[in-house]
Image 1 (cartoon, rainbow, N blue to C red):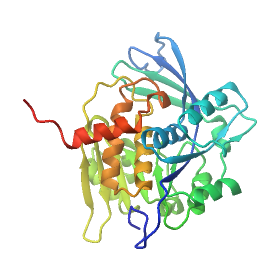
Image 2: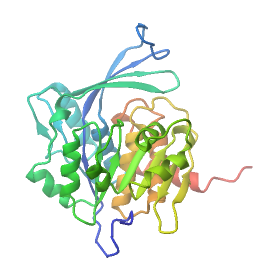
Image 3: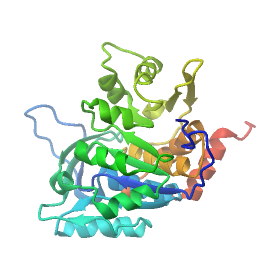
Image 4: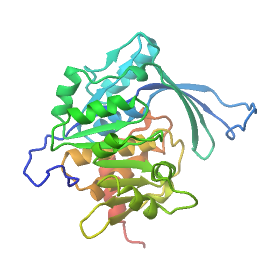
Length: 323
């Protein structure tokens, strides 16, 4: 399959994305440094923000990517769920297929250091009860791109993959990293991972470089995007004459909080693919969105507007001449 999802035919695209994934309330504390084992440190004030990889990516696809976006997830009957629904609705994400369950909404405990790097522990809660029922499957079948992550059960990823139409793409952000069974590998059209996740999934030892990791992963999936933080990213596509590698340059910014930046990247990538962009162009746009996201605190609150993303991507591609 080509990454434009046409499978050699002409298929009309509506730019629709369905994100199947997690939603968490983020409990965030700024810290002078991340604590070591058995250590207690004093942090700043507690912030309570809407988050979760799936919900973040849905906001990214809708607000920063400009795509018609549906979120499929599960929330509890609590005020954390109300916070998340308000954020999703405010970003223009369709939430009519979010189910409410008798389990607390997922919670993420996050510490953020002065350089913007975060450490996260997630209590899944309602995310363990996400499902793809008849209504969810029908919406997935109408989408151009289905985007999933691994904060939900693997059976849900399988069900989402099975529900998509033949010309649609399954984009899997394999985070947090875990072993994937063969049927899940076979369903993936585009794999999105950071360098650590790439090494885990490729079974690499030592200090394998991103191009080596991408080549190993291309043995299992048609296309891979490896995000490299401040160093940009790498797009690898399987071709008959050998792997095609494209470097995605980084945009220098002053990082405030990296929480959710990778999710913003994934959402914008999915939105661009849903509109028919090729994978390298989609990744460049996604990189601009991720760069803007790290300049603001929070996850969903930090997702930029689509016009700002396009403007930054254009400036990065065509920098102004130096005086």
